[in-house]
Length: 269
Image 1 (tube, rainbow, N blue to C red):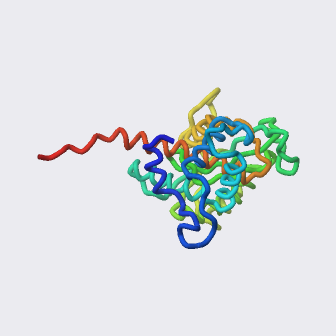
Image 2: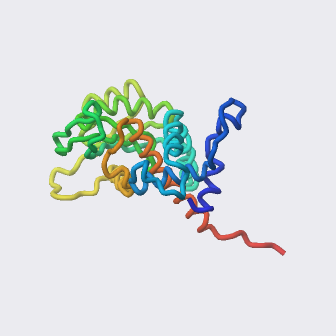
Image 3: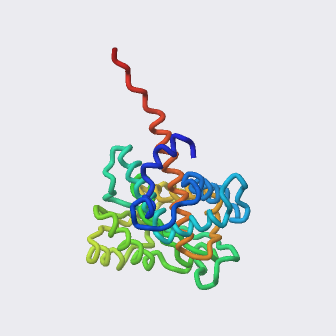
C-alpha cells in the first residue's frame, strides 16, 4: 500500500481484541505488513510458501489470513471501505438496488470433489461465484458453490444473507437464470423486487444490457487478481475471503486516487 492508502485504511481497520480490552495476544507484526503480504498473495497468485522474504514468515501471514477470515474481519473492513467509496461518490452508505449474477471458473486439483461440480451450460468443471453488487459495481455479498449449483438455488442463500446487513436493499436486477419462482419467493419472504433484464429477441452477437453490465465489469475487476483466475482454495469460505481482499485493494486505491485529485484548500492571509 502507498502511504496515502494506508492513511485511509488505518482508520477503517477493525480494532484487535487486546486493544479493546477483550484479552488476547498482541500482534507480533505490524498490520500494514500483514495486509500488504495478503494483498501481494492475492494480486500475484503465488503459493503461500513463495512469500517474498521482505514480508513476515508465510506461516504467520497464513495464520493472519485465516484469523481474519474466520472472525469475518476482512468482511468488516471491506464493508467499511465500500461505505467510504459510496460516500465519496455522493451515495448513501447502504445500497438500495443491486445486480446479481454468477461466474463459473475452473478449479485446481487442490479443490476436493465434494466442493466442485460441472456446469453443463459453460462446460466447466469447478466452482461458481455468485456475486451481488451495487450499481457502482462494488461487492455487497458473495457466495461460492460447486459449479453444478443453479443460480436460483444459490440466490435463496445469497439474498437472505445480503438482506441482513444491507437493510435498504429493495430491488435487484438479474438475468434470465433467476426468473420464475425465485421472483415470487423473494417478494414474499424478503420484500425484494427481482427484475429480469432480457436480451431483445432480434439481437445477434454481443449486446450491452442495461444494469447487467455492471456485475460483468466486477467479474473483470476480480480477474486482474491472479489468485482468482482459477479457484485454488480448498474451502469455499477461503475463496470468498480472497474475493473480498481483491475488492478491498481496488477500493482503497480508488479512494486514495480520489483524495489526491482534490485541490488543496486556498490559504487565507
